[in-house]
Length: 308
Image 1 (cartoon, rainbow, N blue to C red):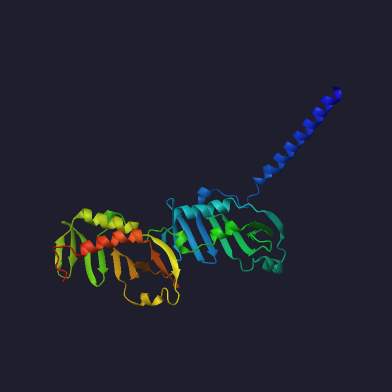
Image 2 (tube, rainbow, N blue to C red):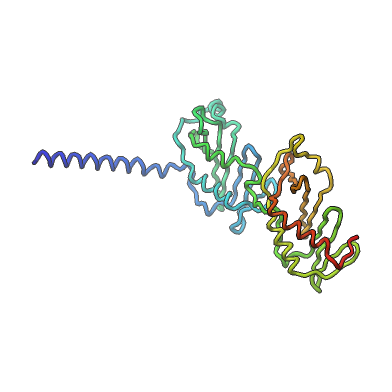
């Protein structure tokens, strides 16, 4: 009986020891994250990847892309940049970069991605993503200011290595608050007109004259403009989509106050171009641009005005 109780105690101690070992082993793993910051205090992000260079700034709890152009950022995507930086957990350490040659071996001399974050106090964090590991599925990573080199899963690199359209708000036309809009200039397939606010209310004008216009129709038009969204970047290629179409005047131009937007029609699809992506066309989502174009066609045929 004594032997049995001794065996029981022995087994209990082994199990207890294993539990302590597991807890001690797992506990520090929570501290293995490479960057430590308060995500709610991050105000600036600089991301340089294989698709371009992007800068983001937080203003009044809203993220904006400030370079290469200024647009409202896709809030969820920017939030994920911060989340992924906060949870960077290496698979393992592979040593230290002791000189320039070791930096080049791992790809830090010309890193594939550079990610910098800054908080409201001016504190900065930086991460370099180097070459892919020979074992595959992993990327070499280094925190700026530290010689240590780590391996992290490819998935983090893939997320950060995205282009312009993934970081911006997909709704292309930035419509100001209704009370700030004074005039909407429209040019569609050679016809030009304007919807203008006056002390007497809204009016529609063209070279033939002017006529009162219902305010609710103006609001409907603006709401449809808000819904116009981009879907993808399509690289120019011979026989498919040519850069030549952008050498002609746009089929549709919209000007709201001081902001101007251009649209080209091609093969029943609608495109535009951005100086940020000169080698590709930006395609609009057909279901978002269709109702907007139909609304413009109705205004174009507004009975009180003699267009022809």
